[in-house]
Length: 324
Image (cartoon, one colour):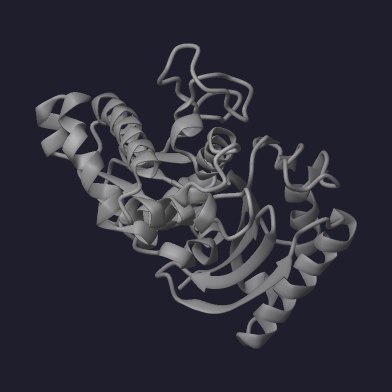
């Protein structure tokens, strides 16, 4: 049984987990990552990795590999975090080399959405699939693609899987990436929250503004509650989101012919209210045969996916090297 170390570097939290190739977790540790300095965080990662190994009764050298799950933009080939939007002090940080040197074991660096796909592939809803797609469906929309039993990374930029940034509306809504009309600009949680705040700024008595946990700052929970209360504005926005989801997912089905498309956070948190409208609209946007051959499901790992993300990256690293 091979032991694997996973390191998930998120915008607000860092998680470290020790597990094995079957998905058993031996220990984990977390640290707040808001306004942190990598000069302090990276030594903590090494110390925690050593502590987790000791607690499991093994040494660091007994760990077969580590995997880093990190947000883009990054230089994935060299394992350098360039400018993560939520961590202003993390600029051009050579995380992979630092951990290789200080842990003394081999490892890899992957896009966080790719790691989510790998986690579902090895340990969750994508098990036993040779071809499937994972969509994060959260604050933004990230994607990971498994095709012919391999993670698709693309060419020099290693940016394949940026499915939230396909254009679904010419000259459409502004996306945080700088483009217009991106899928994420219509269905990402952050974009929808900004849209509600903008469109309802002069309507403080609207249901959504009244339901918002913070004055003037509605979020996806607010929207869901208003939809369930049959508020006309909320229902219209939800219907548009569902249509855009179906449009994008239909394009993915035609392009990749996956066995499954696994939907993340919003899909499993909301449930049928999220999934059913997508399935209803989907026949408008893809061919019948690949649609019927594709099962659209929610994440099995749910909140635990971050615990498995880096471990899954390490497992795939060994798989690609032919060591598993």
